[in-house]
Image (cartoon, rainbow, N blue to C red):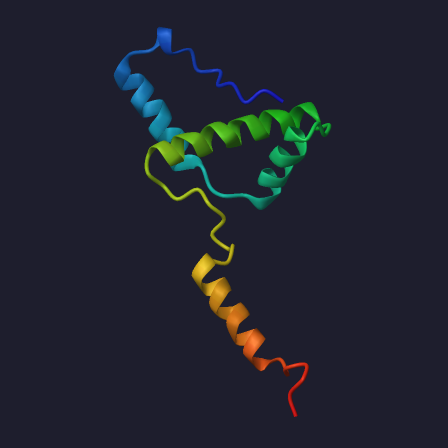
Length: 100
């Protein structure tokens, strides 16, 4: 799948381009299903033409949102520090193999 943007910047004014990219950034929201589809497509998986088009719009919106300074990571993913802390507590709660 090609993630090339269909926006022809030679035909637009800087103000129009700014509005278009801002609109894409504002409309974008994280979708785990679309992230999975994009990853599947990147690994040579087959997607329907409709899903390829939706994934292309999603990727372009994500790029615009990232360029606008928005966080484009999974909001439900555990953060590294919290994950490390949880793992440490789990390790403490496990009995040691050679303890009495």
